[in-house]
Length: 113
Image 1 (cartoon, one colour):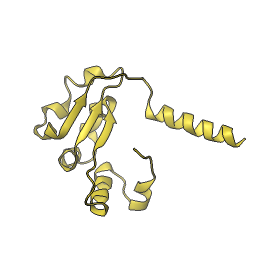
Image 2 (tube, rainbow, N blue to C red):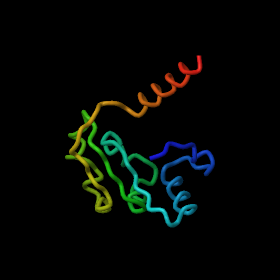
Image 3 (cartoon, rainbow, N blue to C red):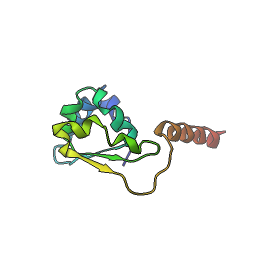
């Protein structure tokens, strides 16, 4: 997994656009979307979410306290969800990606002072 600013280079704004462009630029690459269960709870609000589900496989990982997100999730009720894997096992930590980014940025600047 690599974090990049590729959306700036692709000139895309939404995830669906980004995936479409990545698949066009890298036609032999098999992409998989990996996200936390917190994203599964709001995924149906994303731009063109149903088309995104058809474009590539998704894996939603359990992240506390979102275990309950699986039961009544709209994606599970959607017929196109066969492209989705729900991972409920394994060790988890309650750390948001925002907190990870902020901590990384803070450490980066501290190392430069």
